[in-house]
Length: 255
Image 1 (cartoon, rainbow, N blue to C red):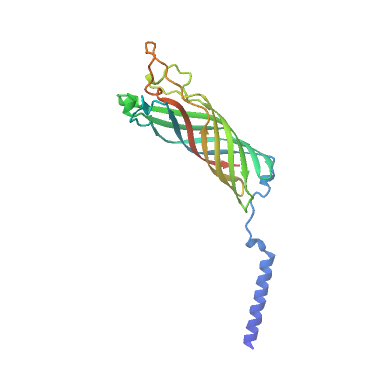
Image 2: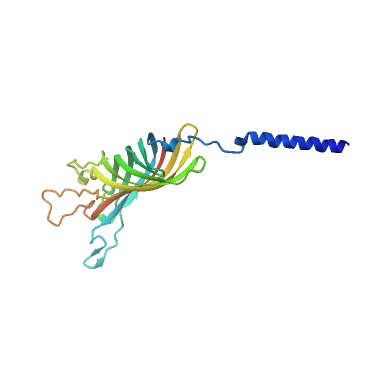
């Protein structure tokens, strides 16, 4: 008798638990944050992050060979450092999975150039140059997103930017003879990257990794001295045909 009663009680409790679970299905489901966020035609935000800048050099034809004789020359060494960036975001929805963005920002970095002895520079101080970059970047970026999965969405992006380097020294009359390395002030770049959208309770957080590549030549050749012969070349820039920035950028956006 007691066994049958226990079975009935157990069955009743089981049916009650199933009924209660059915009334509260959200216990098992994940809460969707910001469900209509991507339906907005326009929205705004800001970003911050860190970066590492490098230089890509293209040397003159006679850098490694002279009169068909191989010259054992070492390349210029670029000592990288970690910089930072901060800026604003304006986002326009142009399709279900495509957004057009403007991301004006300030990017700061410093690179140190170390010249080998075979450049004809005897003094240690002459073989070291600081190249600071304080860039105002005005990029236009196309963001292509995958389908949202709960509160997660991956994406890729590509864009182009106009840059103004406030630390270029382009208009400075002094050059490497006075310890000043000059670069162009206005530059053009393109960028490629990928990232992830995380939909939080109050805002969307999106980390991304991007590569930035210079399109134009940044190098400004040193000015020959007044009494320099026609064959004169600068030991700092004379063997360089082209110099372009390339960078890796880690960005965190808040929208």
